Length: 226
Image 1: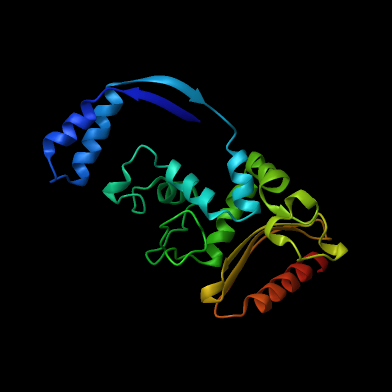
Image 2: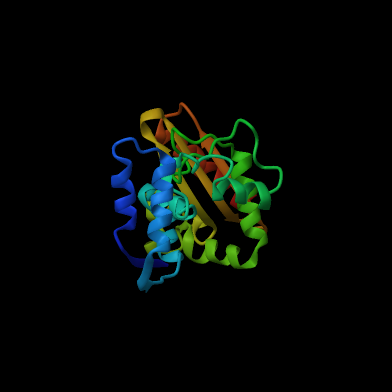
């Protein structure tokens, strides 16, 4: 939800008194002063899926970054702690998904596949398995949040891909592309013809995007038909 608060001028007065020599800690203190001296005037609440669905289906990096920032909304971004060990996302992964975080992994922003993040296919699969093991998360992921060929309104970034009948209602995934760096990814769930569900993640580097997508689609077909 979004809460709108009206504050008096105490925070501004505090910053004016500091002059131009303001540190990150000064801004944090000023924001705390503003919160303590404010009153709530309006509260707007909406389901998180209203943001997550377009974020995942259409690969909206702006929405992804907004959600990532919102998880740490109580921290001041100027403190530069958002991407550190104390961030909500890293804390969640470390505490909830055991054995995933390694020293060489970096979660710096919400875009998933980005020049600032460092992650592995194994990392993504473990996150997908974590979601699958939770009935509520599993239902949300497959019924609402991931792109799929089963619903024209949910094709999203799968538009033009996986048009064969064998893919229909069997692939639920999220794409990722860094065209300038020849990087492409695909991760999600496959419901095979054998009745089993598969969590998968594919990361293609230094490969022409079109060829990478052809490889990913072929691998998904093989998982469905095996």
